[in-house]
Length: 115
Ligand SMILES: [Zn+2]
Image (tube, rainbow, N blue to C red; front, side, top):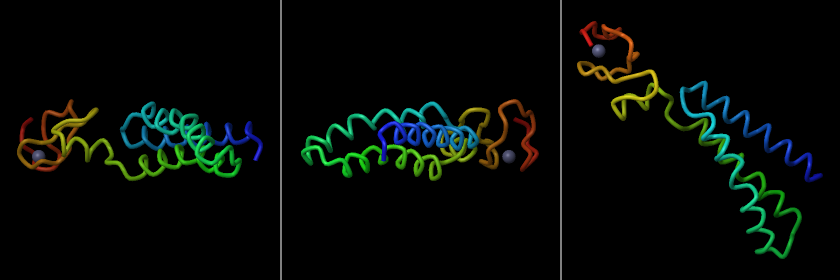
């Protein structure tokens, strides 16, 4: 594959990972960084390790956006993160029933207790 096409694919894939993350109330920027920042160091590492094997370098280049893709699909969404940590983004954990409710809510939608 041409290096330029590979670069476009990596950036498009990183952008997709960022969109998935932000749809789940998580940081899109962090996922974009995870998908792009390690690409160059990984390629250099594999290049040194394999004596410049082009095919291995291409696979190494795609390891980072693939990792970002898996993380964006498997990490807890904003609501699950709120339950685990007590609060995350727009959500807090209800002190009565432990369900995630919006920070701005004055009454829990699950147990109807005042917040
Ligand atoms: Zn509740």
